[in-house]
Amino acid sequence: MLERTFERALFACRWLLAPFYAALAIGLVVLLVKLLQELVHFVSHMLEANESQTILGVLTLVDLSFTASLLIIVMFSGYENFVSKFDHTDHKDWPEWMGTIDFTGLKLKLMSSIVAISAIQLLKSFMDLKAYSDRELYWLVGIHMVFVVSGILMALTDRIAAGHHDK
Image (tube, rainbow, N blue to C red; front, top):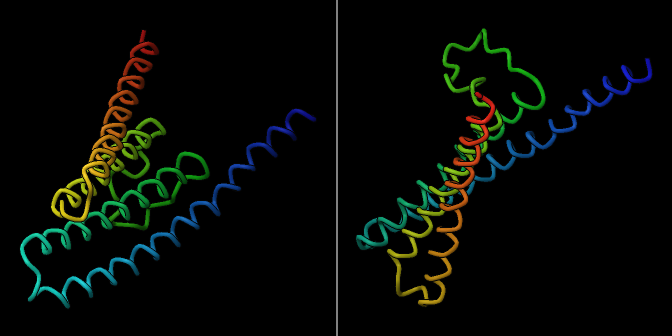
């Protein structure tokens, strides 16, 4: 009986993660405010902006949308994997990926999103070379490559582990 009570209490602790996902939802609102700020700045300067500045503005909007999408993936998948399943019977536009991403898939999506965000930041830096020293650019490329290699190693590790479990 003591063991069963302990296990139930331990299992109920998963709900302690719910505030973390609520905080991510607030982070999504903060990103929306930042997007609106960037959009106002981008549109108000569009006539005097050169091609490079226009591309940088668009890349900033893409970067923010990738980050927001990443938050959605983490919020929904994390909640479904660790807290509770969503009841989506009443939702006609329920995304197909919802409920199908396990923890391994979540890690890989998270890592690929980080690599994409890093690539956008790197591209933004290359579009504005005058604002960065060679040393700063080397660091940006190095950090990006760490993300790329980490993602590849994580995917390989998961693939090897999955192959080991299949045997």
